[in-house]
Length: 196
View 1 (tube, rainbow, N blue to C red):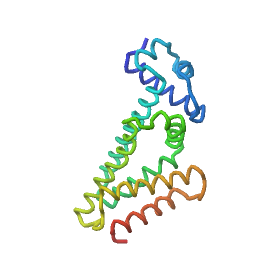
View 2 (cartoon, one colour):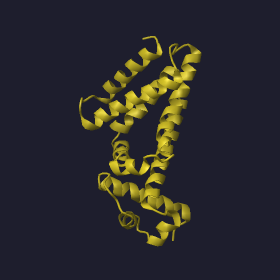
View 3 (cartoon, one colour):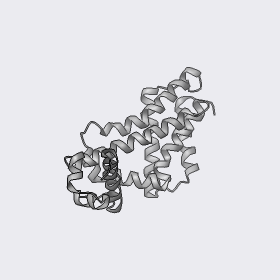
View 4 (cartoon, rainbow, N blue to C red):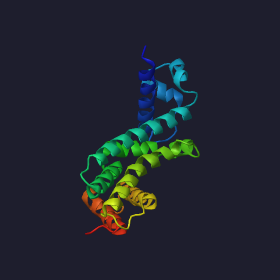
């Protein structure tokens, strides 16, 4: 018997593995339990439906990446470096194999259908945007990003970075990670009024 927290984590980890293996297609409670090696009773101690598992998994992953992203951005020496770190880490969603696999699983049609209209769906957006918004505010205050409109530009830069992640995943156009980083930074710094 597992501790309740460990049991719940085991179910979430199993759900992610099932989603990966099924390429994000429909997964059943039975699939998840078989992967976790747990009973139906264990499942229902923590979740009412498969959709509850998917939502909890999405939220856990978004918050985990958000903590990682924030710690990396906070460690940067100045707003210019913090912007570069934010872009590079976000591009990792497409360029880092493990992260890319998670994005595929958690961005699948089934997961998006489950998350549609659910309040925690915005968590993924918030976890990406908030550290960037803070970087842009700091850059504007320091005069490094004099044209920055942080509340708007943070969403525009996020959209550009995620579009490039999409290109990476589709292979069209093919860019190395360095090329992708330079592309996003060129557009972002120009819009923010940063010195070349």
